[in-house]
Image (cartoon, rainbow, N blue to C red; front, side, top):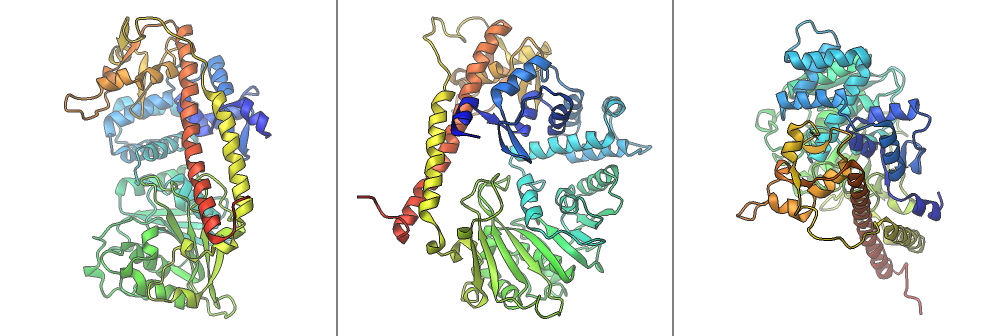
Length: 551
């Protein structure tokens, strides 16, 4: 798309953002794209991650009255939240059990009735996938590490080898099965998983059954302390292990045969999981482990890292962009291992491939540029620290600073030009202010059925209330003051917030302005990040001699 076209389109949104606007799942948005010929065409992005013009999407939603009423699926989700609260995965497991034909479900009768009504109009697999997407999205927005983030699943799948026909894929800390089922998707692989949380393990198995993945077996249990698969040897092991856990059972497992690379210290639980995964890999098999960046250089793990390098087991370390993980903004790594099979050539490695994607967007391409890759000789890694951080081994002289600088500067200039067009045209208002006249509280609107809550966020439940108007006034400083106690601490209490009384046409006029401001704020944040990258690149280029100031 040309620069002028991008500017004229305005703010762009993803399928997930459309789902949030309409109060539905991304699966529902995908269905709309297939069913409705007049659904807006992509205005940017890639084929597998299209972007849509926000103005066009909003107009289509208004025309179709999508999002004006709360969908039955959202009502089911809200009913589940009311019953299960923070234990939503237990509720999802019960729903999956009903859909799978469990004769003795544990759901309350009113929730059961909702599930049965939905099952009459929606395929069980679509319903369970929609609820799974909503659960994953709510975990992401809450900053929870309860499930493996979609970006990490995407990265592991990108760097993992395709399992051969009839292969075995294993995940010893599989959660609800997202990573395990993703890397095996489209293959005839046998999938084995273990998960310590009983509800997550149950849901993973039931969801696999509903997806008709007949070669999937997920069992409950602590993989380190109570390995349910002691004799399993897999072609591919993937794992996003618990991070920062010190009580992983070191004292009771000191003499365990899995520690062939060295006994992990109490603080190095991630290296215990890595060796557990490696112990379950057959000769020639691969392991892909998601690791915190600090595991690459912590002093306590130096001996185990050295053995991984010395024996030629470690093949690649990929540093992913900040923001890929849900619960923090720090970069994470993917360690790629291969168990030698004794054939000689395949086992003989003199280098480890280092890939540094930390300067990329978390949703950007995972194919590294030449300057982001280095084949590091083993001898260079086997020093006193055995630092496996990719960025520590990429030489600045490998980078084409001028080309990178030109591309990034052009992108910043394009964003700045577009930024001005996002600001709404506003005129001087009269007195009194909008919130000084007749107002209505959110609590009153909720009692009247005009407002409902999706993941604790108020949205319109009626065609007499505009969601952008609602959320725009909620973010105003006047309502923010109502959410601040006398001690100065902030407590989010949207029910006490107030809205001015306006007709629906006037609401939409305000809603359009608020929506433009939100798009403006988003672009400002993105330009700020691009600006930081541009300044860092320019400094590094000047310091390394790859750039010089013009006369």
